[in-house]
Length: 449
Image (cartoon, rainbow, N blue to C red):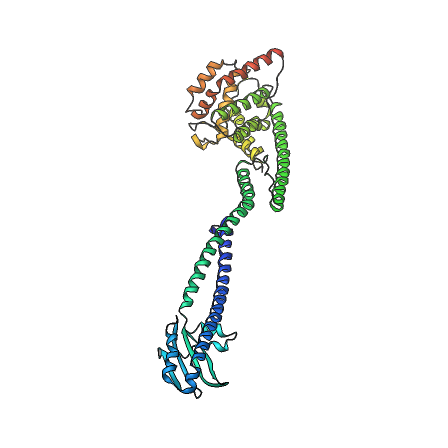
């Protein structure tokens, strides 16, 4: 991620969203449940207290009318046995207390259930007691009043039940939600994961041949289809560019070939030996193919060497040899600066294929691993074919002599790993020159492409 901040996956985002959504829903549900439970509780409490108060008012009406305190107290005794009852009293018509039972301490904020309205729940949540009062009627007239006050501690038990049920519902909802989110996440992210993995593979290999399978839903199917179309276009463009690069390499190698009748066969065999060395080094298929394709350009700089030197039949003097050695730099100048990775590799090979592992080569005197790999591979292949081929100034060496020379100069002139790589494929080297000799006998010579 840009800025160094780790990103969150779609899966984690979906899970967080599910938990957040379920959490918000549960909070809202809990508020509504508390509201509904409280409202139901108040109605039940009111009805229960009013029924009790009406019974007390009925049984005590005669005693209140007669002012019989003993009977009045007897009427209140049953109140003490009611669960949650905190206080009860009977008043006369003037509001004077005739009898009372229960605690004497009362809360000024207690809720009068006789006058319940829309604000009663808010008031109730701020108090711990509620009250009701009913008139005492005797002979068609009011002779007093019964007041009952009840505690609300039993509401906690109801809330506990709501909480337990709500918690179980929450766990079930979260489990179901996460299960749905997981299935949704897989349906969404699986094709995206396949797509991102394919993009990462392409970024590493530059292989545009694979296609992303279509997904089940419209959006990701459209995305996969667009990606496949884009890859097809890139693949077509890449193939076109590859053909143009191959044509450029072919034409430049033809230009080099025209300077020396021996060069054509040398170019073809040297390119094939480069491939064998690369395979012996266990290079990737892409790297092996690249070295094989650019090998015909290793001597392209010879087109800049004067004819009097290139076409001289005899041995070159020191000055002419120095001029001939400049073909490596000429080749680099011709090929360098290209936007093509392949041509840039060809420039490396042209510039470095006469460097030596011990640093005694030219043109820069590079040593060991300072020499580009393409140059180290080409150095072995170039000398191998030069020794195994007939020249105006020397006969062709036997392959046993060529092999012995490569082994003898491994670690001085040549990269030991490249020599070892070629020796692993020496059977194919022998077949290559057997085919050359057969072609020479039949008068045919074919370029290795």
